[in-house]
Image: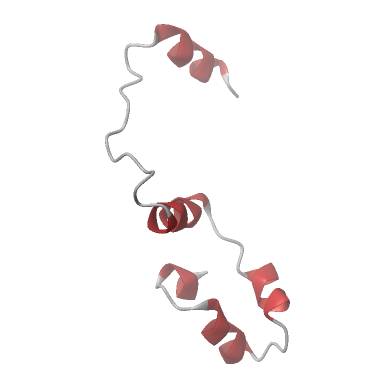
Length: 69
């Protein structure tokens, strides 16, 4: 994961680890939420709005989120 976070291509990681099949490397390189978000933003920059909505005034949503355990 550290190499993926550093932006190293999975092919190079496969070679470094000595895996024959890239699918083996993929098993060990499960991406976290932040990595997935960045990948989607990089793949579809025109579809991503960098202006985040303000949910602080939606009391029903905030109440629902507070009740999650």
